[in-house]
Image (cartoon, rainbow, N blue to C red; front, side):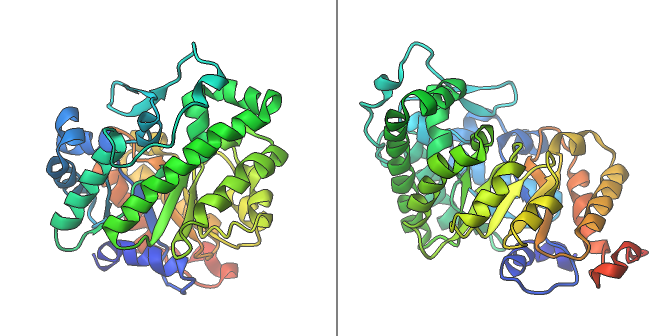
Length: 358
């Protein structure tokens, strides 16, 4: 149990470049999985900060560790605050429904959202304030994830439409990204004030995977820099679990100075790390849908196979490529933790033979 109680510390040690005899694990939880574990109803979870926090605490305890608590209103608060229509799937996962009747010019009259206005940003901030004031002993609270300027603009406008906008009307596309960027900065500044500082910021940018490397360099990287430069004391984390291997060299040469890239199982992480000269930590690796459908021992075996690929490189953090899927048995997540606990990190050349007998 010592490893599991040091869940967060193992991640921090990995990010700090400290040597360890065990791999770190990283998981992200949100409403669908929390509901499948606790039975909490959607309305109470999204509208009562105490219900949200208690359900997250119960979920982490079911997993067998003490992870981060966060204001979980999904991936939509920024776009919802800018007028985007929120829709929920059958599992309660919110997304933005793009308005097909609007043209790009219709979005350019928007003003950056007030994080304390009558919107979902304010609801997220209220949940954050409650968690900071009432978190149980042993838990930490972290800021909400934030959508990148590019992903946020694409969610509002429609992904295909916005990708075309970049080609046909790049300056106007940048205007919309500027509006989203300023909203992101205001939102994160408000969270920074509540938390008394930001250890890290997780910027989500799945949709940039649709761009070429040159487009990514021209239209996305500058907005990463503008955003992260507003928070110079915070670690820079990126989530992109799309087909994004082609973006790795551009991330490396950009000067953004990412500390961690959380991604999925859709490309070779070894190749990504090689193209970035092992300059940041890579987290994720396991397919959350596959893990949800496996037996506990199948998950354990899959995790061990993934750990062998790391060959002792502790800059890899084992975990799932996205949020834990609805219906995933908690024991399957415990199996991932157990696998990381059972592997002793030694020299890379002997790594294939060091699985312990525990």
